Image 1 (tube, rainbow, N blue to C red):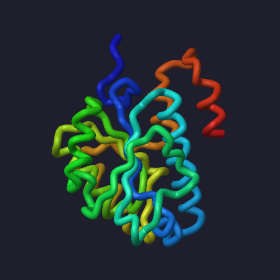
Image 2: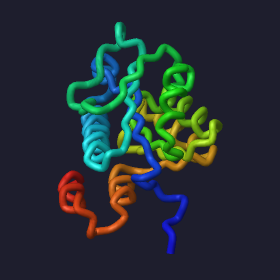
Image 3: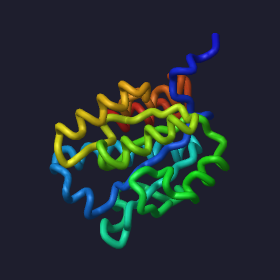
Length: 185
C-alpha cells in the first residue's frame, strides 16, 4: 500500500525556517521562545541527517539580527527578505522551484505575520504546506491561536514536531529511528 498523500514525506519535503532571529526571539515569551527554538533546531538537525533541503529566511537582518545561534544553518540556504511573506522575495521563489519538493514544512516567527502570510501564499502556489505548531510562535498567545485557526481553516496542515519526524522516517526500521526517538524525549 502506498503512503497517504496527506503525510509528510522526506523525499518530497523541504524545511522552511522563517525569521528565527536574535532580536525577534528576545521579544517572545521566554518559555515559548525556548520551545520554538528547540523544535526548530531539532527539525533542522533531522532535515540535515535525512538530506532534506533547508531554507532559512531572515527578515530585515540589519534590524532583527542574525538567525538564532541554536539553529543549525550549515548546509541550509539563507534568504534575506523585507516582505512578510517569503514569496515576496524573488530569489526565494526561484530557490523553491529549483528544489523540486512539493511539500514544505514550516517553523518560525511570528505565527500571525510571516508564518501565516508565507503559508497561505505557498499553498496558493501549489505547495502542500505543513506548519509545525510547536515550532512557531507570536508575542501574544491570542495572535498565535488566531493564526493557527486561520491556517487550518484554509486547508493548511497544522502538525507537530514528533509527527513530522516520524512521518519522515516512515518506519521503526529506519537507521535514524533511535536517534530521532532520543531527540523528542
